[in-house]
Amino acid sequence: SQTIHQWPATLVQPVGSPLSLECTVEGTSNPNLYWYRQAAGRGLQLLFYSVGIGQISSEVPQNLSASRPQDRQFILSSKKLLLSDSGFYLCAWRKGIGQGFSGANVLTFGAGSRLTVL
Amino acid sequence: DQQVKQNSPSLSVQEGRISILNCDYTNSMFDYFLWYKKYPAEGPTFLISISSIKDKNEDGRFTVFLNKSAKHLSLHIVPSQPGDSAVYFCAATERVGGYQKVTFGIGTKLQVIP
Image (cartoon, rainbow over all chains, first blue to last red; front, side, top):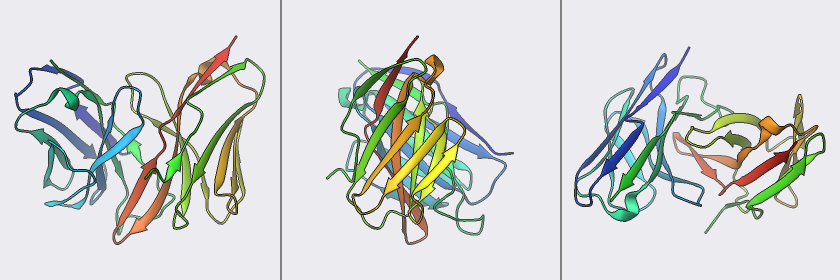
């Protein structure tokens, strides 16, 4: 069975400090990977998605970046955090091409990482 | 431009009654619609989905209805239980090249009162 791991679960960082959130998926290959953010009182905003190693697409311009160094590893980073980066960050995966790719495939989320920037 | 809209930020329902959560969309290219349930400090979990070629899908207490002409879908929970209290997100998918783009609404917070 497939599992998704996301860490750290909570993080308190000062403004201007760097950020690294990591996500790994087990039990599948070539997944589509996603980073979402849920800010206070708002819905789920798609930040980045990836269809393969080194292939990253950004949905919104921001202070963050993403990388996919391995097939099942997705990293969210920032060089200098802003107050507005605070939120609940969610990694997610779903089956990609060659794995029963379908619009019906469920997007499975990790447990989330709560980031507070002070 | 919000392509998936949940216009009710919150809903309160008595235990045992029906909960109806609504969602509207604007993109005709969406091919699947999904509902997710989210508890505080947890990731969303999948609840139920419907293909754009269907008008109803049922799974136990949960039924999703799709009205393509009105670009509207709804989630019915019957009977509602206190454990159903959570934020419900409507989502829609469209294929963009080799990628399935998933767009979420802002969510509706459901409170089921015992």
